[in-house]
Image (tube, rainbow, N blue to C red):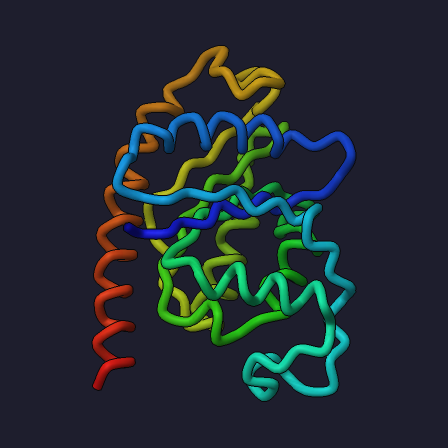
Length: 194
């Protein structure tokens, strides 16, 4: 069974991402052959990265207890969906920091994106930056994504769709994510056993 981590990349008290997470997790229930877990960055209050070496150089030997918990959780996942909001044409600092804390735990894993914004940009610019970061982390950032503009008009507080075709986009994104996740997991396991 593939393990997919859905990372909610905002920790604000009033955040639109909670609507998106409720909606997405509801949509993902239809996929019975995967284990999906919501990873809320509120539950991993990492300080700004402050280790004495890079995550690559540390090779998993983190001194921070929260980082160890975060590393264990990310390490057990086979693929990811990032729920991305856009601040000043980029991703949130807390999401970037959560990515920066680790290295090997991200390697050779696929990632899809669901972005949102209250404006028409729908978080697209944040996703474009995250794709470059994912490449540097040796991840496979995927092309098919879901971008939700005017999120307050599309999803209510419980994650119910008010108006839109966002539900129709999930199947395309998941088809690509599951193919890549399965392929990369098999390759990681073969490499580990060689």
